[in-house]
Length: 73
Image (cartoon, rainbow, N blue to C red; front, top):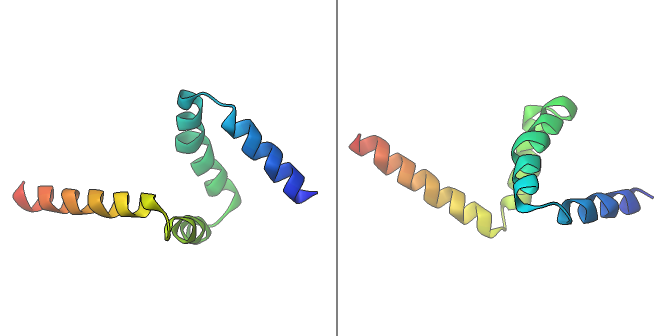
């Protein structure tokens, strides 16, 4: 039954517009994490999920650019 609920949530998210998805992931997901999980729990979930993901490489590149900008500025 839990898998059915999760699949329904996934399908609902897929049907959102790009703007709605951005709002969902930038506003709603963090709020749900804050209200339902500990900070460490949220970090663990996202780090484990992103560890093999192409998004992690993007974050590392961004951190590198930020670090360079700080040392220059």
